[in-house]
Image (cartoon, rainbow over all chains, first blue to last red; front, side, top):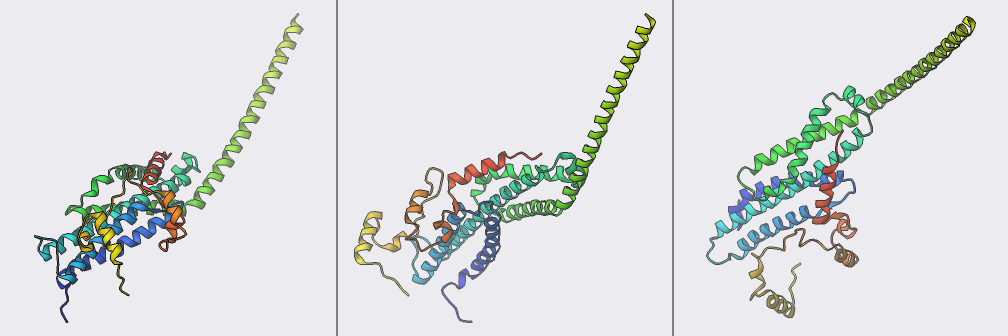
Length: 224
Length: 81
């Protein structure tokens, strides 16, 4: 194998490429499920900045020149680390978008059914709702993740796992659609039947009351 | 295919940005995007016909920073039963 100017950076570049492959999929998914099919400009900006750092490395290695007082290896290592950071931030922004899109879609589904129906068909709904609320609150803190530390991979994996969990819940709700419709139909017809029974009962009570009044009036008038 | 920026353009850019050569700009960061320094949607509309880049961006299918922040707030405000 011949040696090249980027030999020293290959390991880090491979790591970046592997991360990017996964993040790209998350970004495309996020764009795909966005309710108005829009891209988030912040994600595009992070990818632009990642590309910029990679180009700094390639340029430095090709020209053999780095900014003053910076050793080439250190310069390239730092820039590739920054590129990794930007790709992670693009992923976090995309995942934030995924969470809000899924939440909006879940809200649309669950708002179409009364609580007793949801409770009967999807017993785990309340646990999932609590997870969903927690994740949506976390989004507000996403600025705190701007500084990509050593634990970023772990944080990222946990976030992906959480989003997976919401996605499974969303899929489950879609899957339960026919059962929810069926349960709603049954509940409505039971309510209608109960309503007819109640009406008949009321009519019965009214008629009985009327007859009783009539009898009492008759009895009283007979007594006179 | 290699491109070569004309000497006059090179001089104008270097002069404006206060560097002696284009390579001196390699370590300069792009402008950040924040609510205060956001994408100007009117400008993207203006240049959409001339832009050879993303169709999605030209068609305005994107959230600016301000729009996205608003979008997040609205969606977070949706209460689940």
